[in-house]
Length: 122
Image (cartoon, rainbow, N blue to C red):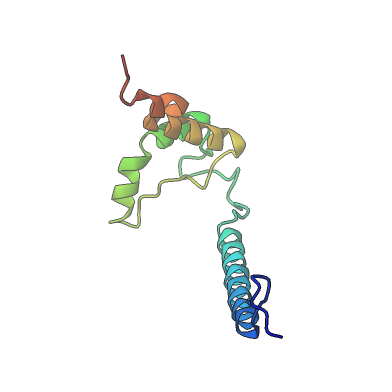
């Protein structure tokens, strides 16, 4: 007796889902491995020049970090065309320079409230 119920699954339907699912898993696995490699490549390393003096005899501190953070857009454009200009002073005093640099960069781009300056509805 041949019955045509909606529950019957033909062998063709079962076999089509298998390779597609396997291919999707392979693509997902490759994407995850690729993302992990990209993130690992961006991991910061140690700065062996922290605490060592610059040409004038002292490492860069908070105030120079703040200033360099504020002028980083201009410095970045100049650094594209010359090897003598860098956007970040490697001869710094460590965390205080980094804090000043990030604070200065934040001041330039508007800080955490810069995004809310868009259109205001009345």
